[in-house]
Image (cartoon, rainbow, N blue to C red; front, side, top):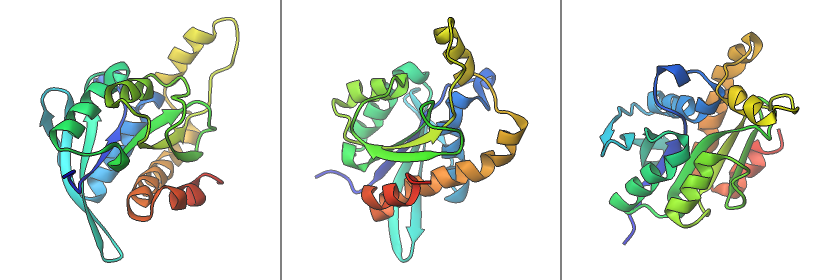
Length: 199
């Protein structure tokens, strides 16, 4: 019997030098959820910071785990799969929050399944879970100038910080991302897509 817990995982890279970078949008959004639902993190097998809480909305209460993988982005799947196996949480009850270069800054797209879109954290989770059938909250960070050094540009871009104007908008954007994850859990994927994808 699978547990009735949900798992929300925000992706990022551990360590001070990655704090506040585009690739750590998932971590930042997880921190918003942690604050909102009074979740405190502790260590899960050295693979993730993991906390446990209860969300409540309109009389519904949902128990959930909140994870920030410590494995670096390219091995995020190890952490997510370990928590999923340990607490018996099926893919349908997993929401992954991550940065997405295919979306302009401030845009949010909610989806389940489909391609990893070149995101190494998502590729890793697909592999480790053996299915892409979990929900994803994609937070747009825009993309670097395409050019001769496209690969280097991309790496520098996702590991870069935000412009002053974006930094101003960041708290609202992260709160929206947290709302999107909650909407998936309380109202289902289709409702979340309806509410966030078109904006």
